[in-house]
Image (cartoon, rainbow, N blue to C red; front, side, top):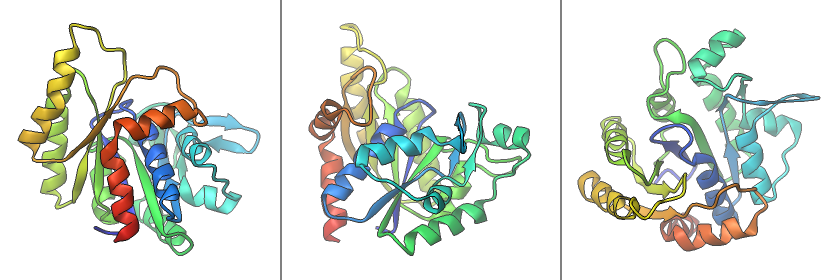
Length: 246
């Protein structure tokens, strides 16, 4: 494993990448690592008195009890856009083209000061960054092993297996799949949500690291969230321990 970083991607948008990224960050820090989150491209930013703020990055920082200075905040989130849309469109509207070389330079500078980067992507694997490059191109340049986040419900098998296939075609190491329950599960859906991870593990030949239960509205400082996180995702606990010992 490349010990410098992990890239957290999803099968789509709104599947829970930020919660998984924040929780893994907490586990790594608790295991004694000097870990830092990075959200290189953030759309749907929040306007503040000092400029655009990355809500996903702030969630991870708050969850882990970290405070970054202005310089490191800029390095951890170099591309921030107001519209909540695909990165390529947000960049076009803002007139601020996304440069992969700029992101890798920011990552390199952070790794000169910290041991580990947890990089959260935007959207899914094939989200476009411009007219010719996708999130996958960024992942290939960084070269970090990948953690795939998927929702647990109907439709996830196709999305997860396609994502795994293209990640492996790109010769990227896949650490495993983490499932997230993004909506309440009805009694009629229980058998589907129980079967989906098994099928993806078998057909995708991938480790399933657990499935986070549905918790409704969540906050970064909600200890109930992180208690269930550790209970539901034993594979991430083992991953953090393995990284600390490697």
